[in-house]
Length: 225
Image (cartoon, rainbow, N blue to C red; front, top):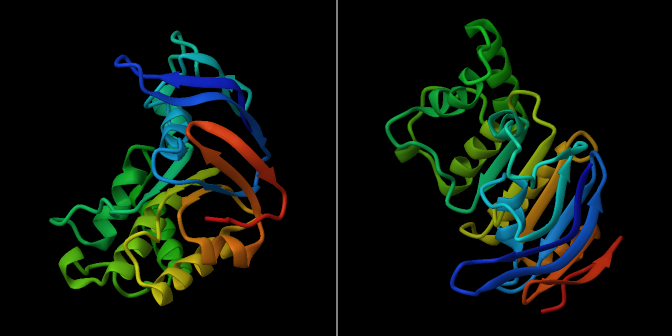
């Protein structure tokens, strides 16, 4: 479970990114995080990853209070979380296999295990047979598939997707969403997006942010611009 309890985040120059935000996300739940630019979506992602700590309030992940300054298990926390970014963040000098393997090597897995996990992940995202292909040879949609494969290997329980369809054309965006649908019910997915068509079509739980506040939490909601 992920729980935000009256969380606020203010930066040193006075900018308030979040104010008094509270919500709970259950294990294996799929949640859309929506709102205009600057609403606080990325701040929530970074708080979960503990790239930020809140100015006030508490962030709890799997019963661990990760907001405490004395929290010492940041590396272990991040090993349980896969992240998919808008700009893919794949390494251009490494092939598909190597890009995905990086997130497994930190877990200390044997090479046989790494190969098996990557093979299954590539099958799931529709990139079987492209192990040795380099990023320059892949389309934007394929690069995002590599990023998703990298995020799901290693038995990660939580997937954070920060605008993962933002750089994709509509058709490719829907192809990427089909992959996330396959993961539904198996992982906790927090999907930050501006894509109204995707949110309104899938009818998942929607957390709506505006100016740092949580203004709506709808179980089967949509996204009104």
